[in-house]
Each structure stands twice: as C-alpha cells, then as structure tokens.
Length: 96
Image 1: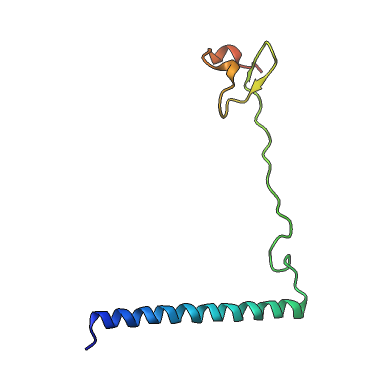
Image 2 (image 1 turned 180 degrees about the vertical axis):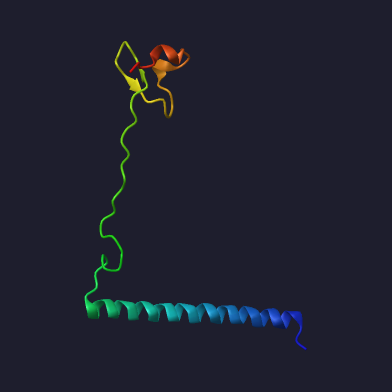
C-alpha cells in the first residue's frame, strides 16, 4: 500500500497534468470556435453579444430643498450641502 506522502505526490502530479490538459483543450476549443465564426461569417450580435455598451442613465431626482438666498437645490440624497448644515431642514423644503 502507498504511503500518504506518495499519494499526495501522485495527486499533485495529477493536478498539474489536469491543468495542462485543460489549457490545451481550451486553446483547441477557441481555435475551433474562431474557425467556425470565420467560415460562417458570424457576427458578435448574432452570438448575442452587444457591440455597443449602453449605460442606463437615471433621471436626476427632483429637488426637495432650496436655498432661498442663492437658489441652490438639493434632492435630499447624498451628502448635505454646506448651506444646509446645522440648520432645520424643514425651513428649506420646497412646497409643491
């Protein structure tokens, strides 16, 4: 019967062989895919990949507070502006 050290050495060797075989098979698979794409003239869009990256832009939030002196507004999200710091926010609410 093999010893623990012998078995771990065999296991390590097998892991290395597995990694090398996987890399080789991946390279072959990629080459096959590239060849098929070239043979049939397949585009990225036909494969379901978008050629343009579109980002969804959110509409800005409506203003909730207004500085009566300057007209500056704040939506109530994020860091509070300096003109509102330490003051009662209810006084600056925008009434609709």
